[in-house]
Amino acid sequence: MKPDKHINIRLLEVFASVVKHQGYSGAQQDLNLSTSAISNYMSELEAYVGFTLCQRGRSGFLLTEKGQQFLHQAIKLLDEMNDLERHTEMLKGDLGGTFRIAVLDATVLDETLSMPNIIRQFNDRFPAVHINLQIRSPNEQIQGVLNNHLDMAIGNFPSSVNNLVEEKLYREQHWLYCSHRHPLFIQKQVSVQQVAQCGLVTRSYWNSTELKRKGFGHSTATVESMEAQLTLILSGKYVGYLPEHYAQNMVKENQLRPLLPSEFGYQAPFSMICRRGRSRETFIQTMRNLLIKQTKTKAK
View 1: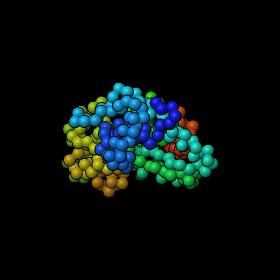
View 2 (view 1 turned 90 degrees about the vertical axis):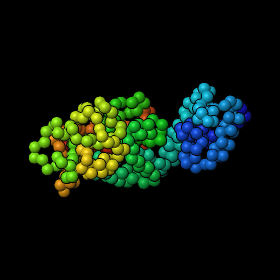
View 3 (view 1 turned 60 degrees about the horizontal axis):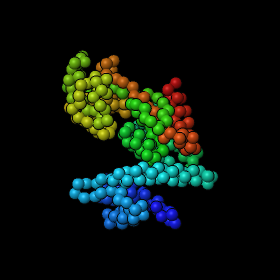
View 4 (view 1 turned 45 degrees about the vertical axis):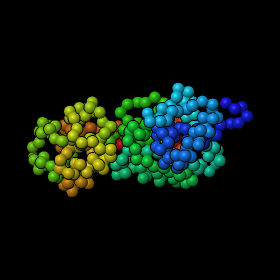
């Protein structure tokens, strides 16, 4: 390292993005730079550190051993810089900045969670804060919180994860539904065996153990979002689990029917997660308190 010159943080951001996207092409959109500009940044960084960080060629993108070790320290420094920027914003006194939060899809109609009400109260408290609200799957939420791309996430997380703080909020009721186009919709008496033999649409992040717990050996279609799941259910070719609050209006309109609620139903525990060490930050603590107050009041 050169003792008379500090490293340019922008070089580290480019390096981290190139590794994340496994090459220059994938990092273009993330960095809003051309591949030639990214190449120049990488050449400058390698000249600064004095060794090769990654190998690029027909065999693909590959970090060198030293590059891997350097990446670990670079990400650590970038995280610390992000923390410094957040704390600086709070020390200004106007409590501005950006608060990044992710939720599962199809939660807007959930009166227990009531995210619109939560956001309204948060904005009343911190009008200068820029809210970045994202819809993400559980795995994406966990990774986003761990790498500080998200400040907080709200969803159903099947197992605990190291370096995360989890606050349990409430349980979301799910039933198994078929649409008015499905053969079982008009049957008065439906058996467990008949239901178990139906084509099932499920979420891509459910594993085989999860399926068995919900009464099925396998699925015949997978989706990434609740809207896509509802679309396949409405085709009449599949049955699938949906949150009660999401399906209730279509049940009233006789477009959906819950199948054997005593046999096919479950409750998904919803939690709030943040990265360990950040739970006392003002924005996170405020949002946590609003969520607890909202969900506990509705649960009574």
